[in-house]
Length: 205
Image 1 (cartoon, rainbow, N blue to C red):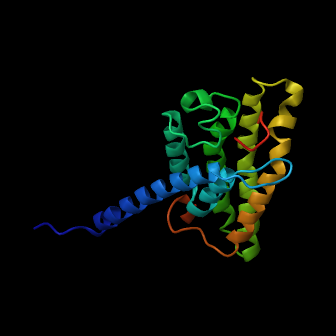
Image 2 (cartoon, one colour):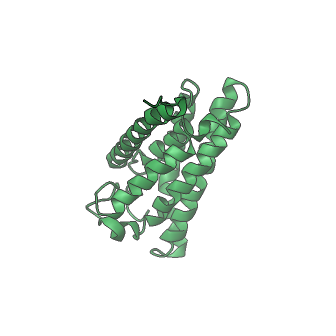
Image 3 (cartoon, helix red, strand yellow):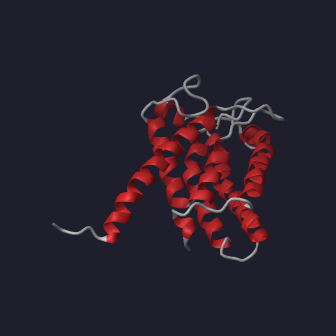
């Protein structure tokens, strides 16, 4: 009888946890995309809150896995996005006006997760909260950048900012501030990389 090695036992325990995290993360991200909260100037959904939360609390690699699985489910036609199925479904929706924001989510999560892990190495409660705030703000740059660039294919250049950024900035800043404040009380979970080193009248991105 061959004795099991400690490393193999650890790996066997890690895999179910990773799969469970992936499934739960995709479910939470889908739910966050569907929830609408009354806000000014337009109602806001919670998917950017979920994505940035995954990045700073789980780390960039688990966050990227969750987002990749979420996008893959949307690509094959499951109505996981905030505007589906009413505004299209599958690749047709992903190639529509809000597709750039979807493309920016993986890059934004990677930036936010890695930067949060880097800044968290500095001592002090303020750096934990402030570092994650900076990381999430940096992570939103590619989301808005790619989103606006892609949106410019569908609306006049002079209307891109007014339709694709201005209505959503305040809501996203509030969500990031809430996450940053909460992060002062909750540590990053003990797995993932953090352990080491629109054209409509609602937020349908």
